[in-house]
Length: 191
Image (cartoon, rainbow, N blue to C red; front, side, top):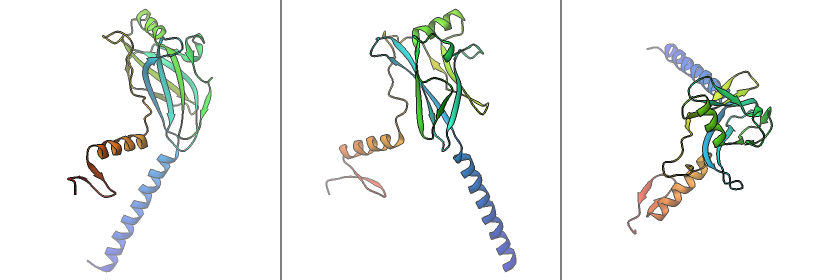
């Protein structure tokens, strides 16, 4: 193999690497949203609520034009802004969500259950957000059935950050005798 061929191969590899790095940077520079849904209890009214958080994980702000609660896996959906204001709480739409921030809404869960029973749509609910760009984002399906033990199902907050997880994991490891260092973890044998 000649030196010219080696240099041309190295140049092609460097060019492709730079191209993929720029494409990856372009993808990460936009706005990316994620929708978390969970059940809980409103501490003031002691009513079950369906809470959903729209998180902008990207670097650019995004505008949420509308939010809808979709019942079942069908096309039956209800706009949040058209519900009675006593049944939901949250910021008014359209809403601009800045980079790396969250907006939250709460809807009374009994109202959603009544709508699901009325339309015979099953026990699954999804939240659909329509963006100003014309695109939409759906949350994962979420069961609105009551807990068999009675009362709502309470879950750990959906927006537990990665940093918080690392802190908890590190504290657990220290408490259980693991030496936490920069390179590797090793069992502390009292040495």
